[in-house]
Image (tube, rainbow over the protein chains, first blue to last red):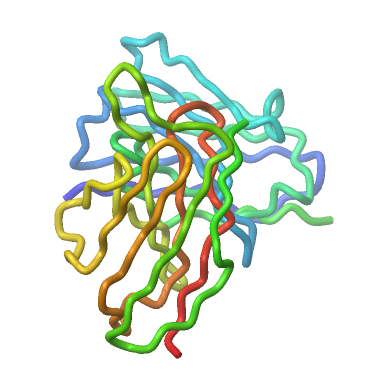
Length: 118
Length: 113
């Protein structure tokens, strides 16, 4: 069974930092483009960013609202992908989902909640 | 950026009846290199993460009931549930994966009438 499990969410003050992690199992991780998508409570889905495979240079791409503040990285030896979030703003409050970009985005983790509040 | 617009925002359908959700992209998502439409549909039940239902605009994911079907090309797409079941209550999203940023529609909330 393919599974993604996120961790690392929590409460952080504006301007603070947080690192989210996602571990994959049952997936050929080295061949997967890994993506983060977020969803503010009661709102729609917003693509955050993506990292390609190491063989493709682990190239990253980000949505405009997070570019320059968020960084995605991967560790294929651990089947892990990370989302480093710096200079957090209240509008970054959301559930953050890890997903694999294959034919569409599939599977998805259960998500981890990040709350940015003073 | 490609803007995805769904209609309607919400929809109430009786059990056993047909539900239709539309999705329009601000530019074509048909890739000339492989003639595929880079358009996906997702179902998000309350309290759950999204689930991929359809990719390439009309290909059902293995295990998705055949009452779900989808069609369309270039900029206009449709998701149809032929006979609504109680477990289909959810928010449905279309998404383009043609070009970054990979944008989603705003979602259509489907409920039972």
